[in-house]
Structures are given as C-alpha cells and as structure tokens.
Amino acid sequence: MSTKSFKSFINLDANATYGLLPELYENLKALFPNLLNPNSVHQGGQAARAIIEKAREEIAALIGTAPGDRIIFTSGATESNNLALYAPFLWADEATRSRGAPWSLLGTALEHPSVLGPAQALRQKGVELRLLGPRETRSLRDFVEACSEDTRLVSLMYANNESGEIFDVPSIAKAIKEKFPNTIFHTDAVQALGKFPLSFRNTNADLMSLSAHKIGGLMGAGALIVREGINLEPLLRGGPQEERLRAGTENLLGIASFGLAAKHVRENLAARIASMRKGRDFLLHEIKRVFSDVSTTSNLERVLPNTLSIQIPGVRADDLVVAADTQGVLISYGAACSSGKQDPSHVFLAMGYSEEEAKEIVRISLKAEYEAGELEHAASVLISCIQRMRK
Ligand code: PLP
Image (cartoon, rainbow, N blue to C red):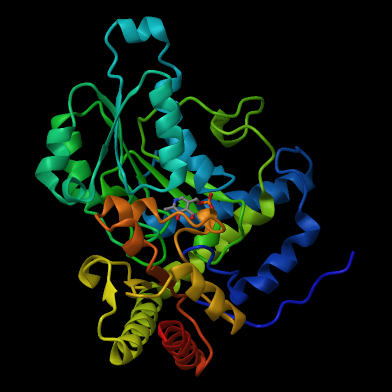
C-alpha cells in the first residue's frame, strides 16, 4: 500500500482535530507489541488492561473526578453524547411513562450535531424537546425557568465548537440540581478540555462527554464521565467491557493516546492556555490592523483562548477556506463534520445572523504550539487572501 505524502501545512483548525502531540509518538510506538485484547486473561491481556487503567487514571487526574465517579471509554464524543442522551430515556418504556416518569429533554440550539441528532430522534419517539436560544442559554434565570419537574435530562455544552463561547455550566447545573434533584445534567465538554481548567466535580454535571483527538490524542477514542449514583443503560450490548456500559473490545491505542495526551495537558495546562491566547490575539490583531470592519462573533472574554470566530464582511467564508488552504493555512467554515456543504452554520443562525452574514464567518482555532514564524506567515496569507477576495 502506498502512502501519499502530505505537504506541510499550518493547522489553524485545531477545534476540528488538534493533531497528535509529537510528545506522544515514542510512547505510543512503545505500546505496539502490547496491543492485545485487554479482556484476555493471559499476561498479554493483562498488559493491555494495565494500559487502559493507566489512561483512566490520567484522565481522572486531569478532570478531577471523585471516588465512585466512572470514566466510560467510548469511540469518541459522538458516541458519548448519544449514550448520554438516549440512556436516561431507554429504560423507561410506555408503562413507566404512563406512571408519570419525567419525559422531556431540555437542550440548546447551539449544541453539536451529535447532541442535536439524538435529541431530534428522541422527539420523534415522543420525548418533549425544548431547545433554548443563545439569550436564554446565557441567562441562569431563564435556563432554570425552562426546566420543570418533567425534565428528565438537560444537555448544555461547556463551550461551543464554532464560536468558542463558554457557557456557565457550573452555575446552571448547580441551580437546576438544587431545584430538580432528579433531573440528569449532561455537558458536552469536548472543546473545553485542554483549553480551560476543567474540573468534572466543579461543573456540577452528572455526565460529561470528552474526546481524545481534540486534545492531541488519536481519533476514535472518547469518554463519558458518569457521576457516582447515576445509573445508565448501555447503547451497545454484548460484552462486559466498561462496566457493561459499552460492549466491544476497547480501542487500546486510542485510549492510550487519550491518557498520554491528558497527562501532557495536565502538566502544561497554564502554559498551553497562555500560548493559545497569545497566538489567537496576535492573529486577530494582525487581521484587524488591516480590516477594521472584521468582528468577532462573541465577546472574547467569554470565548475559549484558542478560538477566533470572525465575520469578514464581503468575503465568502468557504472561498476563504479554499484560498488559504492552497497556501497551506488550514481554517474552517462551520464545523468539520459539516464541511463540504455550503449551508450556513446552525450556530450562527441561532445567534441571530442572517444567512448571508453567517456565510461570512470563518473559524480559526489554534493549537498551543507552532514553529517560530508560522503564525506570522499564516497572518500574512490570510490577509492577502482577504485582500484579493475583496477586490
Ligand atoms: N462535541 C463537540 C462540541 C465537538 O466539537 C465534537 C467534534 O467536532 C464532537 C462533540 C464529536 O466528537 P468526536 O469527533 O470525538 O465524535
């Protein structure tokens, strides 16, 4: 099999995938001889099992779980989100429901498609679904008022993948759990991890979705963090893995990369955040120096330190993405999973942008580490592309 060699590029699309941390290469390679089935009883299986448990410890250390909380490995945050949304409703059959089980789901219109998809599917199965807009999502009072005794599950993302906006999950979850202790609170914290001092217990959530490839690990591994006392039903059955919550042989290499990336992030978090912010602010400064009409889609004080979501009047974002790409600078228009289609992002439409305006919004999302001169080069590429497109 021949492998195509890729030309070098500057990844300013880290919210889509961070890219494997070079610090992990050697450690992952050293695991190759031990990639056996972690469920086998022999010594090969035990060595593989130890790799998984080590990764679990590293993730626990990064997010500060309490004893009794569970870290359930999944194939990624899409699966974690599906598990979190479906599980609270799965066990409750019609009979249970007719006995008056709470049967509504409260979310926001800004969620990732891997939350909105199962939410819409649940609606088709009779679950009452309410999706809040950005104004209500930002207001503690409005959010809590939208919840009721009938709300079985609340799902609120910690930070948006497109705008980078951070929501006040700790306060909203606390207020909802105080008023409605039986309501389960889920947060999709995929984008916050590694860019924010995230602590599971401080989020006050019951369930939290995470993904390895957003923090420098491999694709295909994620986790659902489950607070002590929360009982879930699995989506995938047929094996005892992950405390019977997720059947199937574990993605050993992916999980190992998740653990190693978690360790690296924990040991360098403050420096990484500072570096992302410095790079992000530099790019914004350079772009705004030339184009004063460029605006950020959210107030940067409430935005992830690595994310720059900007509207560039008169410039089609999808054209800019292609133009920058031809010069080796990777940025994005909408989320990666929706790239290829030209529809404007549901996030910016929900935020009140018109279709035409939403098509002018690009996302630049940074890693913590770039080679000297890379960001200066990226800034000049973006500026020259915008200048050309405005002519
Ligand atoms: N949730 C958010 C906020 C995301 O940004 C993503 C990926 O783009 C996901 C969930 C899905 O993660 P995964 O790629 O691990 O399935």
